[in-house]
Picture 1 (spheres, helix red, strand yellow):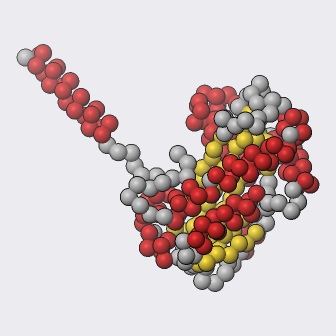
Picture 2: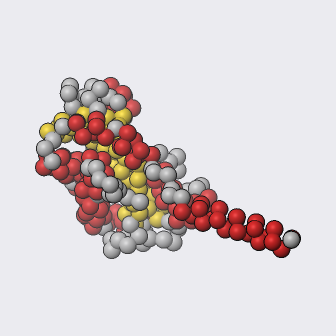
Picture 3: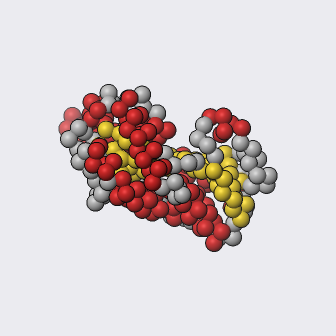
Length: 254
């Protein structure tokens, strides 16, 4: 009798395990938002795309206080760490701040007439126009006051784009590799948030990596071209993710 009982319990555990494995994971929040606001998104035919001037970040995880924690969390934690440190250049580590400021100035000095963020916004604008939308491009300074006081164009939904471009090294001995973070928020013409998301890509497969920070500075042209290519590759997937609907949703980044 005992054996039967044990076997019965084992069977129930197996059934529960299989049932648990068969349960699909919950849909990401941004997809839930998109589905809930499908009609509003589909009916928004005038889109104002708001972007900000270019800024660049340089993050050396091995040189920050987050190194131990991020290493313990593995690749996912590392990626999250880059996202947290590169987004908004919000780290208090003076080295990251100084290097980010130096690289941003270097790029601005050499590419004063070329904005990668504007190119990205323009690419999405073109895709929207091809699908029958009317678009406006608006550059907004990256400050709390400018965002808070922005009124927007009457009758236009707003697609807010926040992109952070940079290079990150996973340790003191690792090479600097390109990192791109994209944040977007789509609002309707009344200001209602329809869908939003933040995602990061750390391009470990890049051919344009730099062993030292000084080599990154001297190779700024290669770094600029690499970040330009990587960001451009995200425009179509992001447009699809926000504005197209299908049974099998395509996402910009997993």
